[in-house]
Length: 235
Ligand code: ADP
Ligand code: ADP
Image (cartoon, rainbow, N blue to C red; front, side, top):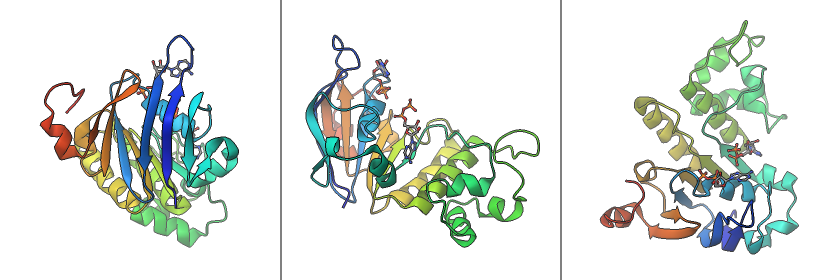
């Protein structure tokens, strides 16, 4: 389960300037679809619609056949995990930050998730009084380490649906590749919507959708899109 359908979705923050002008696509359960497009194309708006921060104004979004308008925000938060561009950590311990979303998780489960996200050492060696934020007695986590906290959190939560919203775009190239590998691992077998502004970061997705001017300008697998030299926003 976790099948997502956007069916002729129209959305405008301001009615004179529609952001999405009738967008249809499907993320089959367990598959990954990337949304690529220039800044301002409406990529993050798609994820806000999935969380019902806003409702679509025409058309519909369904998850496993249920119209999102009949699904509570609370159950959407339970079903969807998100790794954002910059993870903002709580001013609390590392374990608290990883456990967020699954407060019932045992220390063992936290350590296992941290291990898979490759921050196992941190979790074992940092005294629990130290908070994960920069500050007095705080850890100074790098951008990559913060993304690993977000990944550990997602592994622990194990949601059927995952949104990766430019999850590596704030990182340097070497770190980006490492985090990308972890993300590929976490998204395996999970319905995944990847938001990106460059095609080169979404090579492994089952389908790539290029948004432009509120519509789907191109769609296909990475190799197919690379053949279209013209009209593509980004390589
Ligand atoms: P992307 O993620 O592709 O960069 P966004 O979905 O964030 O694009 O934004 C799409 C457009 O909607 C942008 O022009 C942005 O300025 C506008 N926008 C985003 N959020 C709001 C808002 N809350 N109110 C009005 N306009 C908004
Ligand atoms: P913005 O770009 O303004 O942050 P987004 O659509 O990217 O807009 O915001 C998504 C928001 O969803 C985040 O700001 C956060 O508050 C919330 N969020 C992030 N992860 C989760 C999650 N796992 N479950 C529910 N809500 C989340």
